[in-house]
Structure formats: C-alpha cells, structure tokens
Image (cartoon, rainbow, N blue to C red; front, side, top):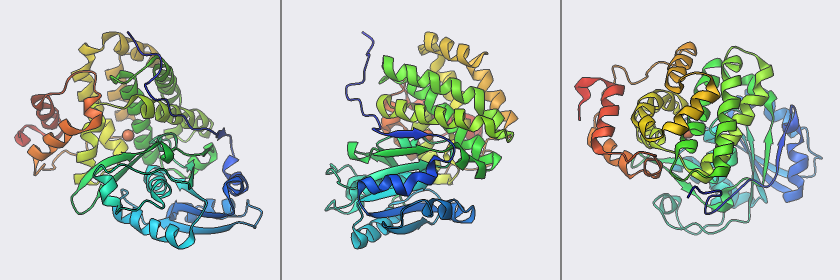
Length: 374
Ligand SMILES: [Fe+2]
C-alpha cells in the first residue's frame, strides 16, 4: 500500500515568503529572546545584505556576528561557532547564506549545550534536544537546507562527509526573500538549482516517498523547471518560483529521503571539494539511466512535468547552463573506499532500485573515464 504520510512528518512551523522579507529578520527574532547570533559568509558583508538586515531591528537585541570562512562546512567550523555560542549564550541563531552557512549554523544551534565533542554526534551519538532557536534565511536556491532537520558536515581529520540530524535542528522561522538571489552569479544559480532539481527528483523516487512528499516533489520539479534557466539568464522575475521550488524540495527530502545521486555526491564532494550542485548535476543522468526501468510510472510523470523525456531534459539543461563534468581528467585515488561509502550511505539505501557494487563502479567509470576502473 502506498504511504499517504511518512512515519514521522516534520514540517517547518513558520515560513514567510516575499521580496524584502529578510529585512524583518531582527524584529521577528525578538520573539525568541533578546540575545542572538547572526551567521553569514563574507559575501553577505560585501553585498551590504548583512548591514541592511542589522539596521532592521529595534536596536534592543544583543547580537553577535560569526562569519563563515567559506568552503564546505566542517566540524572545525562548527566548533568555532559553538565556542562563540558558549561565550554569548544566545536565545537564537539566525543564518543568512547558502547551504554551507545554514548547515553550520543549524548544527551549532542544535548542539548548543550538548555535552559531547561534535565528532561524537557526527559519528552517530544521539543528540539531546536544544533550546536554542534556529532561523534560516537562504541566499541560494538551493540545497533546501532551510527546510530540513539535516546538517551535512565534513570531518576534515577523517575526510568523512555525512549528515547529522535531529528534529530540534528544524528552523523555527524561515524567511524566503527572492531579492537575496540577486547577488548569486549565474554559475551559482545553475549549480545550486541543479541540486534543488536533483532533490525534487530523488525525493519523488525514494523508497521513503509518500503521497504528501510526492505532491511536494512534483510541485518543486515544476517550479524549478519553469524558473531555473530564466534565473540563470538573469531574469529576476523567476527568483520567487525558483526559491519556492528549492524550499518545497527541501521539505520533500526531509520527509522522504533521497537516492543514489546523493549517495555518490557526498564521498565525491569530500574528496574533490567541488560545488555540491555541480556534482549532483553530473551524477543525475547516469543514476536516472540506472533507475528508470524500476520506476516507469514515476519517470513518465516527471517527464510530463518537464514536457519532454526527463533524461534528455537534464542533459540539455546542464549543457545550456555550461555545467561540464568536473571529474574529466581527474584521478580517483581510492575507488574501493568510495564504493564502500556510497553503499553505506542512507541516501543510497533510499534509492528505488537496489544498488550493487557493480552499479556504483559503472557510474564511477562513466564519470571519471574507463581507465578509472576500480
Ligand atoms: Fe543536495
């Protein structure tokens, strides 16, 4: 019997969408307490977004700022932010940024007060509930991180990139401000948009999908299909639809899980330090090829939504947005451990067709070239 709802349904409690809504951030955060922490990247300082947002409050709040140094989020970033939280003891942590910034801030708010070292939680220790509110203001569309209780972090000592999750990681307030996409370059819009598209597809095809998440995934796919290329070409009128699609895909994946593309993207992303969305974009076609016969009805529905064969659409869209295979000419030094990590991934386990070692090897060969045969 097809599930109507997932076993556990976790939804963000308060989401506001509109141009300029991020300027209300500090005013809205006052309902969580007067001590807060703003987390963002240097690009938000350069663009003036942080300054505009800081001017929006009443001035009564005691707010500290932590700047994410850039690159993929690591446990070291998390520890650094947690040190500030222990010193300042805020009531809330608000992140303004892309997936990396949101994931570090989300985990910091969620682990604020937790007794063990962060690596223990990354290794699977159960996470205690946190009283510190997390508020998400995404500036890309996107990872959907604003809508999930998941934080993807890399342990730089071991090279392991994986997700940690807890219901208290869910944002208590989400501000979706399409104006914030104005500062994204076309390359960032393309790569992050392909992540959102992949997440819509994988959550729809996941073995954890339900009637509810199917509705969200298909709506997300439709929104992204209608807006991504326009946004890439600088049409700001498409930003609201793109941001909405990314957000819906985030809710869908949080409640349905993903699939083999994300099972591949984490170990490959950790080794090659490439934009997650770009890795998803190049892994999606071979994974769709692998899955399509196992999900004929769903594949046909998705092709209906995009108005053509889904696989052909994904190839041509990536080409039109200049997304080239970043693994060409690269060497995968430890294919056996990549295969092992892919097979152990929770995303891979949610893939609609059972994934074998041979299937992973075949996909890696298609990404890196035949001489990389593990
Ligand atoms: Fe993703």
